[in-house]
Image: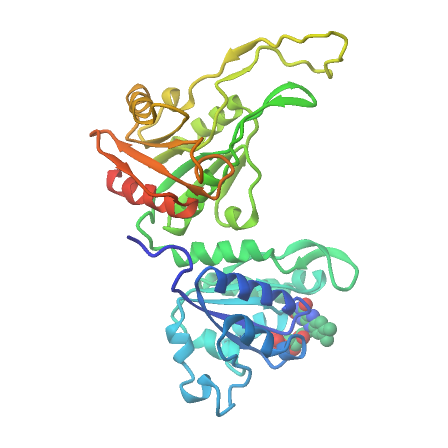
Length: 399
Ligand SMILES: Cc1cc2nc3c(=O)[nH]c(=O)nc-3n(C[C@H](O)[C@H](O)[C@H](O)COP(=O)(O)O)c2cc1C
């Protein structure tokens, strides 16, 4: 089994003296909740914005604030943290810190750690727009990128000065997702291209109404994240809204209807190694779309529906195909028939009426059936764990 996400990973969180330093506390908390061990290292300016005690309390670890503090881990062994790190994340990174990093300085706990580590380094700049756009800052960032540092671009919006522009610290979810991607870059799906579909398609009746189903997209999004975290280049064709942690490092193609999903899947799958269809694609769509809102002039309204194409059966690809079967009865028989009819390599079946399973739920209880007829019934698991179980089997099917 591969290492999954952040559990058991050592992350050094570098915090510098930006007004966004308080947001680093949220990042630290999320990393800890995801199972990582977090060592916080702060610049002398950073501790003027947020007390080290905040990070100490959230991470349950001592915080390093002074390169020369005789009680700190850095002064005992000034490269110990750097050596132990699986990743060094700097959030927020000031313009000044980026400049010092670009020039290879090591005069504070953060830059000293960066210089001493062999682990991947991720920086999340946060500053006023003019500081960010300044050629000096851009040149420093370029230099860092050339050295292999990963940059999580700041967002545009309202800045502390009251001005609007680029420079806000990236969303914490996007930062965490990027750390997960960076940690998994040499995983067992490294170099592979995986296309995942998710969500329930929406079949429009008129500009204000549509027919859909209860799929939340959670299973498909978990699969896309898990594949990313194992090193795959992932295209996610989704009919469900995508959160920042899912979107990090994933090529997200939002779609609405089954026909749109089919076009995106066909385009994406041409160079893919695997296609995982976790979307709940509507079997039928309204026969006609009314460009005006249908008025309530009649007592009854009969809506004629036509069949949507079957994406999995009709898509032209050499990729390994994994399908899902959401059933309410005769689970195994229906799933096996679907596997054969659609030429799948593997099918994941779940009884969507079972408690703790199926739509909207955070857990799923699935049965995995492969071409050879092998049937594996898994216990009820969080959807992320189900995703990894599916990928564990997918890996063995890839040429
Ligand atoms: C109130 C205040 C807010 C600041 N916010 C930022 C900021 O968001 N980004 C930035 O690059 N610098 C900011 N600075 C300037 C840095 O604190 C300053 O350049 C400092 O030298 C950075 O030190 P460090 O990189 O070692 O943490 C701010 C300064 C003050 C006084």
